[in-house]
Length: 437
Image 1 (cartoon, rainbow, N blue to C red):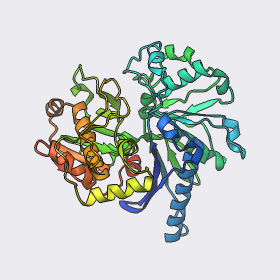
Image 2 (image 1 turned 180 degrees about the horizontal axis):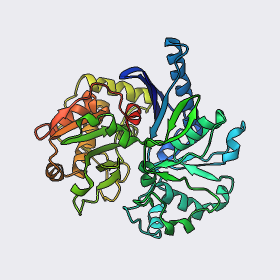
Image 3 (image 1 turned 60 degrees about the vertical axis):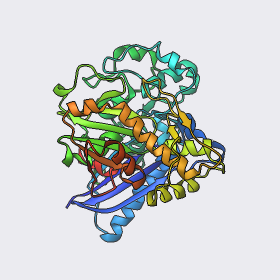
Image 4 (image 1 turned 120 degrees about the horizontal axis):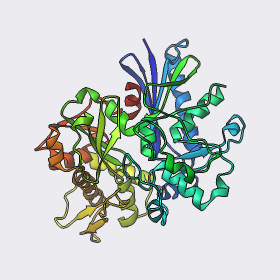
């Protein structure tokens, strides 16, 4: 039977799973470490790319050890990767073979310096959508305008998943020209339906940095590693859906991680000509597209609200303990407690954060409970129920943290009367979904 490894390189952690046939052999997760002096870096949309790659490499090696402990002669047949979309990282290709690789920070999907919105208005229109802050090519154009000299040391760019694949292959003396999937190229902006970069953005980018070649086929093998086929990286949203595509018909997918998405698979011919600005079309496969509302505010809002409104100091462990408590029991909420957790501006919308009804007696559990409701309520406001009904959606599959009791009760309260809720057999989503294209 085929041994397959799937890796999800996310915003705050990397996840990995290994399967032999239909059996999940192991699943591991590791949060990225952050140096003390840079502990707020994620809030600026800038992350340490080398730490992310190192963490992902360690997970890959750990999975290999697990497989070898079961059967020493067992080898990996396929490696699939997915991860956070929109972000861009730069590197010097030749340096990857040395002990001191030259890489930039990862400018992720939340990267939005104060003047970037004005800058975006100076860029060409994108023929396939609207360019937003945090989109890879918009970020690269911004960096080129604001600090061109700092880019001179780089000659390649890609997503963090592309850098992981390149690094993995370089370490084993394999080919290093890794193409980019249509999923991730579209998330960068200025990717055409023909899978090429839009010509009028090219003069606004550093000419010495090579853009990746775009491939439509998410099954494309980019190289082999000790006999294992390494596939082009897909988007984490698409991988989350692929993990559950057995439910494809009449089903929408509610996905909760660092951010939040509500989406469904449709035939391109069924997509309405005019969509509300909060719903976008995304590539999925040769025959299907995704219609998605992609909220910037998911699990990240829980950390933010606690930092802003708790009476005691914040820590990651404190949040984790509180979330465990919420999974066990729902605290009673004051009738006037209302939190709309739009702490990161939603793309194309003017909604603002709103916090009402917090008093000195309001507990951290109550604040978090109200924020969970606000996250779900905001997501459904971005994807009108009338649109879901027009697409004949009758089921709602819960993916990622959406399966947890603390989110599920609010999903049931808001949507349970109109949609049948589906709960997958496994909580493993994105790394498993990456292997199913």
